[in-house]
Length: 400
Ligand code: USQ
Image: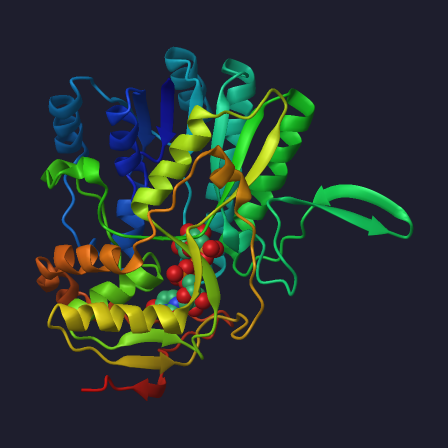
C-alpha cells in the first residue's frame, strides 16, 4: 500500500516508516521538524542522538532500496498539503503530526492556544485535503486514551449503548480530558467523526496509551534508524523518564501518590497496532475507534519495576514522590476495553521488564546527554498556572 506519514520525523513516525517499508509498503512522509524545535525551546534534547533528516533518508534508501518520498512542510499549509496528496495519492494517511505534550499545553495562554491551533486546525486541514484530493484514502489518526479521562465506569472503544428515559442509542462515550493538549484531541475526534458522517471519509481514531521504549527490531543499531527519546518534563513520558533517571542515579519522579493508572505499550507494539489499522482499513463512511495499549499499570508499580530492573543492571536508584504539578485523580477506577485490535490480530509483546532492560542499556551509552539536562527532570509547569518546582513529599529508599 502507499502510506503517507504526517510527522515522519518524530518518536513514532520514524520507526513506523521503517516498520512499513520492511513489510513491503511504499512510504512517503512530511514533517516540519517542529518536535525538534519544541524540545529545543524548553531547553531539552533527545537522550539518544538522532540523525538529520538527510542522513535518515539516506539510511532508509540504502536499507530498503526505495526512496522515502519526503517533503518539508506541515498541516497548517493547506496548499502544500493538497498538492502533496494529489501527487502521491496515498491509500492510507497516518496522522502523527501534532503537538503531543500535556505540560507544554498548560504552560501559559500562548502555549495553550498554539497547541489547539496547531492540532485542531492541522487536523481539520487534513480532513479537507483528503476530501478534496483522495476521498477514498483511509485516515489513521493518532488520538489518545487521555481523551476519556478516568471515569468511574469501564471505558468502551469510542461508543457505548445507553438507555435514558426509556430510549436507547449508541453514542460517543463521554470525553473528560485533563489538559488543553488532550482536549485538542477530543476536538479532532469530533471533527473526524463528523467528516466521516457527512463526506463518507474512512477513519480509524486510535486512542493510544503511553508509549515507551527505544527500539524496534528493524532499527538494527543503524544510527540513521534510531528514534528520539525525550526525558524533559514536557516531552518525556513516564516510563521513558524513569529509565533516563535510573541511568544517572536521579530519583524516580513519581507525581503525587503514584496510584494514577494508565494504559502503556512498547514502541514495537505501537508499530504493530498502527500497521494492523492500515492493513485492515475502515469502510466507506466508517469512523471507528480503537483503544491501543498493551496493559494498564499504576505509576508506583511501574517505578518499582524500573527500580528493580535497574538494580539488575547494577544501578541503585530511589523513588521519590513529588507534589503533583497536574490536577488529576490519584486513586481511581480504570478499566478500558481493547478488544478491536486483538480481534484484528494484535499480539501484545508482553515483556515489560525486557523492554525496560533494553532501554536502560541503550540509555547507559548516553548517560552524559541525560546528566547534562538533569535540571529538566523535576517539573515546574503546574496545572493551576502558578508555576513552581515540585517538592519531595515522600521517599522510598531501595532495600539492600
Ligand atoms: N507521571 C509521573 N512521573 C513522571 C511523569 C509522569 O508520575 O515523571 C505521571 C503523570 O502524573 C500521569 C502519568 O504519569 O499521571 C502519565 O503521564 P505522562 O507524562 O507519561 O503521559 P501524558 O501526559 O498522559 O501524555 C502521554 C503523551 C501523550 C499521550 C498520552 C497517552 O505525552 O501524547 O496522548 O501519554 S495517555 O496518557 O493514555 O493519555
